[in-house]
Length: 231
Image 1: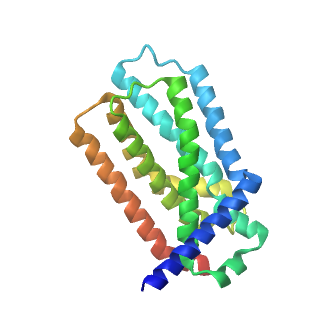
Image 2 (image 1 turned 180 degrees about the vertical axis):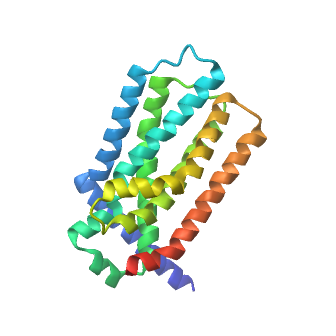
């Protein structure tokens, strides 16, 4: 049992490393996500004035803007995790060399790492330009991490679904939005609660929902991926 688990972990690591090396050679996904995020963030910061708004309204607006930027930024880069396999014609080689679960988990971990890295670059700029008044920093960053994990979990499966289609970008965003809508609503409310410093029980409830969404999404995607991948 220990040997099989170690071998499975090694195969997942190899898949993750392969995607990371491919990405660092071209930087296609990172550039697409960062370009959209930074452009949108700069545009919002230069054109939107929130200083005169009541504190509650300002916090809600800024939390919604954060997740709108992160969502559409992710939509511009995450589909490439399977699209690049189709473009390079390496899909058949992957099917012959690795189990579907290994492929999914490896690419999921790569997407999570990609989103966390982009968030680490975008969030400080967001804090600097828009200057939200965050009262609970720990739970704010926890909401951010759980939200990025749930977004990557759903997007990994959806990217495999749309990889063989022609109009990948718009189809991916159209499929992802209804699936990720509960996550976005909960993440916005959780960020708002962290900014306003509401009761810890309220923030904790949002964290529980985000964690449950993450587990449910990854579990469902893992169960369905085999059927999607073998079609």
